[in-house]
Image (cartoon, rainbow, N blue to C red; front, side):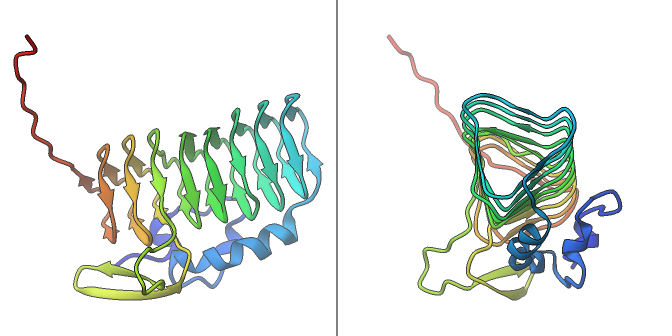
Length: 228
């Protein structure tokens, strides 16, 4: 069972790796995001930052050099945006968010209490709540990281083989290890953890722990009939 931050992410080049200090499990960082963002975010823009007319920024938002925020995006602090990022039109960043370098936050994507490590992409109609995306992780269009159980027992528990780990968290979306990717319209249910380089097929609904270098396949059958 490899669920520590070092098991899932290469943190050597990540500017905010201190967030993970002392974390036994990767999800232990989730309750620390708000405090870390509040301590390090400030109203500052690096060299070459472009904020298009019609973008709305409020609160303490640190924007790294070379980052572009397009018209229609809404960014609320405390938020940290790394260097050379794209925050595209109609993105919604709700605060308590840490974004690494070279990240894409796309059209109609919503981030809340979330960390995106370097070069992660949430480019099209994604919801990321109480989640962590590793380096080079990619969400297909319409992928949702669900963070709230509808069951009566709200505490999120993670099944790893025959073992069940009580995370103690009420809000916990998903964690994607470095290089993992999801297909279009997939759903990662609360408390899902993908190891490194996991591929989830389109439209799949996933929960629990998926070990590294695994493909989660969704099989469908189709019937073709004469349209005349």
